[in-house]
Image 1 (tube, protein in one colour):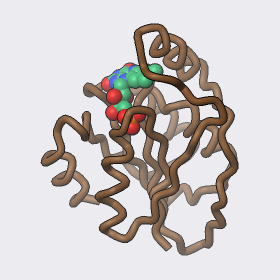
Image 2: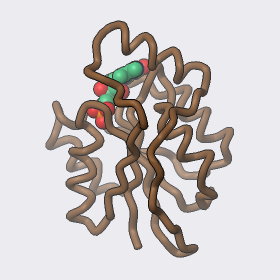
Image 3: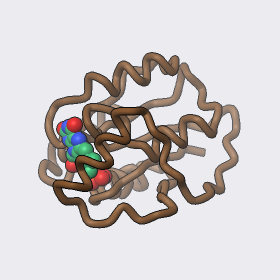
Length: 148
Ligand SMILES: Cc1cc2nc3c(=O)[nH]c(=O)nc-3n(C[C@H](O)[C@H](O)[C@H](O)COP(=O)(O)O)c2cc1C
């Protein structure tokens, strides 16, 4: 099986999930127990702060049984230059294959440095694919997904 396990607060990850579904990746959307609410300045500060301290958001149970030969892509928005807190949770819950698991990171700008460090520290070997603002740059996003 091929899976795209991802989080999306404002639709960019969902957009990528739809394209990846056409390529045979079953979307597995991570959902927080408490809805994050509509993003505004204060919430961005709050959640960005949580990402900065490597917090793990409480998430709804995922019905996911991974087999050894499953192909996994994990998708996260960038929060404060880091992985989003729901994805921190997922990474602590499953034993993903460090050699083969791929990551797609979707920031609004270009800043992803700390997230790269986080993934390196966790032992993931593949260079993440960065797709900046997929919803605003849809054609560029589609082209980048071809490079997977
Ligand atoms: C709490 C928070 C912090 C963010 N911090 C950054 C950041 O440091 N750098 C960046 O490029 N984008 C940042 N963003 C923007 C998101 O990474 C970007 O809009 C992403 O594509 C959203 O994905 P989604 O729509 O699937 O949730 C932040 C967004 C939120 C909500």
